[in-house]
Structure formats: structure tokens, C-alpha cells
Image (cartoon, rainbow, N blue to C red):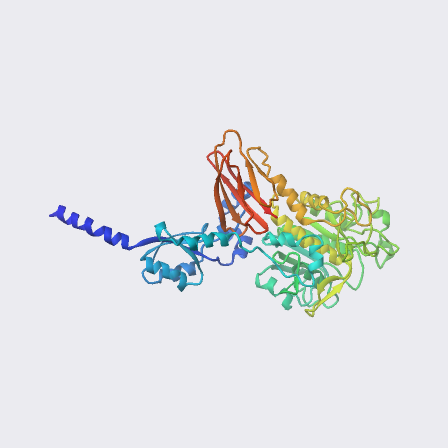
Length: 538
């Protein structure tokens, strides 16, 4: 009897089993990706973060968990059981009838596509279209509006195209007042992302930096980096995080402001700030006995300059306006821009030619000054009244540059502050023939990134070479003599899987002409090799 019962169960079971289908349901997006990547401890253990950092593994959208709200909605769907989930694929494993599973696509707008474990149930045409659509994924693009010329001059928009907009990086803006930043619509995007991490007025010893009516300088400066008005204005690092510090006592000029600045820089260091932008400079004071001379601009005399050199030694990257004394009697770069550890920024006109007010370098300085140039004459800014206008000064060429600097460092997190500065100098228009007016010239951030990635793709251990990088159509792989094949997976910078193939010594290339322009992550895996690199598609 037991045998007969068992036989009956086996006869019926196949019918029950195959009425149910297994499938993977892929979702279109995840929740708060940028915020979670910027705060990886919220999604990864510290040990995991340390390991990724050690091996230069990018923390990206694949590390962000699947949206639990989506999962809950599918669990409640008719005839559907959920068995597993994958953050890497942004998908869940479901079981149900073919009809119930198929209905998920039309019922839930967040479902991207469905793949049945029984591949004969998948519609070949639709799957082919889906694969093609992956290669057409749009990367980060902005309509820069009034701010277009000043970012395009230094090719900072190419960093944005590659999805480097400052996410996860932190800048301290040390300046004068920041009136209305807490209410202006042009900083709404910044506030919505909780990207103003803290404020402090070192002059008044108060956290309020928004009601300082003596100067709107900080607001104008911040707008060139973090301002955002859709289709009208985009700063050079719209997704970075910021600390806003006041150290300038606008009504007077006194060396105590240098002390405030050093105190602010120390706080920035303790908070883990990556980049400091300062659109301030000190040369002469109301009390002439406190004033410096040209000879004092030697990179190691002014208190603020010595403080800046320490800040550089602590690992921060300091970007500072060169000064507006080019056509005045003073003439040369002031403190702290005279420090060797500071990337000092001069000003050019909209056509890239020298702006007469921009302070010049001199042989008194230990390193060539100014370092590089950005648009500082008629730069687009946003006033405290939320009005786009133009203003002139190295006060604006500096933050325009600083935003692209922090985006470049986001792209190259293993580089030191000195290495990032040197990449920027080397990319500039007159690197081999610098002068005291334009310094090394106008940098090209696309070239700076390409140069770094070209070096990066040639692994130090010489196990494998990937070339060319940047690439247009075909990527080639030179494998070591003991390697018969390597699996290559290509992902977008948002973690979307785009391509998987096997590369061998006889078939050592992959076609990438269908990819959009931008940055991609390439993972190489075999029994002997485990590598992750970044490539640029031109």
C-alpha cells in the first residue's frame, strides 16, 4: 500500500511541478542610490569597504540593496511566490504560473524585464531588443545653460558624462557670507540630497552662515560649484557634499582672518574633507605694519600659507584663487595661493585669453604660479536673490576649477592630492611652456582622466594589458602566456550589466561600438586573474 501511494504521488507530482514556472524579475531602478553610495557604511560592513578600497574595487549601484517595497508588492501579487533576491542583478527569483509571472510586466511599472528559467518561454525578439537597449543607456547629461562655457572650457562636463558629479566627495568652501543658501531654489537640489553637511562662522562663533548681510561672496562662489537650475545653470560638482565656513571679516582686513582660516582648515581635516576651495587672498592690511611685501609671497612666510602647506601634508587638496591684482601695483599671486601645496587658479576671459586683473606669478614663489586657469571674467553666478548673472574675479575661476577637481578625484580615488594636481597641470594647454600670466594654461579634465586610466589599464604586475583606453570600437586584450581564456564582463558606472564574453589568445577583442560615450567598469575573471578596471568609450 505504501508503494502504491508513493507511485501515485510520483504520477501526480510532475503535473503540479511543471504548472509552476521559475523566473527572474529584473527591476528598473533602486532607491536612493547616490545617497547610499556616498555613505557606503549604510550598505556594506567596514571590512567590505576596506577590502574594496584595498583592491580598487568600485562601490557602485550593484552594492545597493534591492528595493524592498518592490519585493513586497510582488509578494502580494496573485499566484506569485518570491524565493530569493540579488542586489548585483537588481532582481528577484519568483515562482508561479507562466500567465501570472508574465502579468507582472504589465501590472508593475518598476519591472524592467522577465527571464524564465525555461528559456523556450522567453520571447527572443523582445530579449534581443532589451539587450540592444542596454547599450543605449543614457549617462549623466545636463543642460548647463548660462554656465556652459565655463565648464566646457576645462572639459569638466566630460566627467559628468562619465557619472562623476562629485557624489561621495566632500568639499569645504571657506569664504565670506552665504546669505539665503538655505532657502534659494538654486540650492534646493543640494539641500534635498542633504549635501550641506555642516556650517560654521569662525568670525562670529556661530553655526549661522546664512544671515550674514555684510557679504554675499560665499553664495556667489558656491553657486559656480553646487548651484542647479534645471536647463538654466549647473555647477561643476552638483552632487558633492559641502561644509560652509566663514573666515572672512568683510568690513576690515586684519591678519586674524588668516587664523580663522587655519582653524577652519583644521576642522575640515578632522571632518574628512577632500578638497578646500578658498576664494580669498591676503597681501596688505588696514594696519600697514601688518602688510606683506612681494618678497614675502615665497610660499612659506604668511601664516595662512604655512597653514595651507600643513593642510596639504594632511592629504587635502587646496584650490585657491590667485588674486585680482594683475593690473594693480601689487601684481602677483597672494597668500595662501603662493604655497607650493596649493593649486592656485588664475582667470581667463570666455575665449580663453588672459584676464588683465588676474594676479601673476613671480620667481619669489617655490613652485610655478599660477598653476592653471579657468574662466573668471564674466563668469556665470547665481545671486542671493536666485538670479543668474555674471561676475568677474579669480574668486569664481577657483570654485569652477575646484568642482571639476573633486569630480576627477572621485573618478581616481586611489590618487593622492599631489598626483591629482599634477595630472591637472600636465593636461593644461601650455604645460611644456608655462609663464607667469597663464601658468600651465587651461586644463583639460578629459585628458587628465584619460591619461590616468591609460596608465591604470596597464597593470603593474604585467599580467594582462587592455588597450586602447580610451576606445572607439574595439578593445583588445593581451593575455599572459599561461592564460587560455578570461571572462570579460562590462558594466555601466551605475552597475548595469551590459556585456559578457570570453576572451582568448586567438579571439582577443570585443566590440564596444554600440556603447554610448562615457565611463565603464570592466571585470576580468579566470582561474588565475581577477581584475577590475575602468575604460572610457569615445
